[in-house]
Length: 195
Image 1 (cartoon, rainbow, N blue to C red):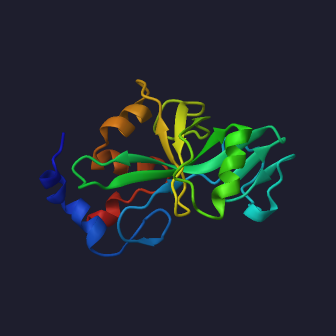
Image 2: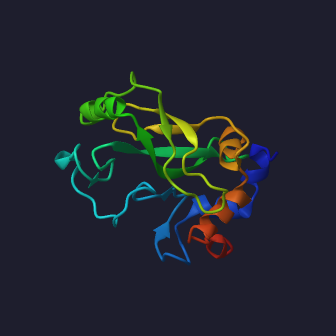
């Protein structure tokens, strides 16, 4: 396992944080680490056009930045899954993901969404609803959502299993693994960190 001092001495890690850099894949200017995000649950059949949260339809098909409903029977919320970076001084690599919720828990979440007062809710059981490149099948992993106050998206904790994503969430990942995951998902930033 890397210690904090090891990663602090990695010139790529320092370059990531020291000054803006341009991703060679997306051509966006970044400074620091950015999260990867899924715009919809894997089960959503259509494109990623989003409706406003305020037009939530509980009886049909609906997709917004934060909520998804399928056929009035399946309910999803957008959340964050974080992987601790070994030797990263507390930094985490995040994924914007989707998870199912029961109808009752979904309604509780929606009712408190605008107030941002959600610390007292959950944790709630859900089924992880995205497929991650760079891992064996991730859709339908068991997870728990932990709502947070202050209009933050809930945190996803996968149930402890031998699945590599669950293991990495529990034990952390190396900076090289972060760079690999970014590359696999269309953001090979390694060339940008060597200038």
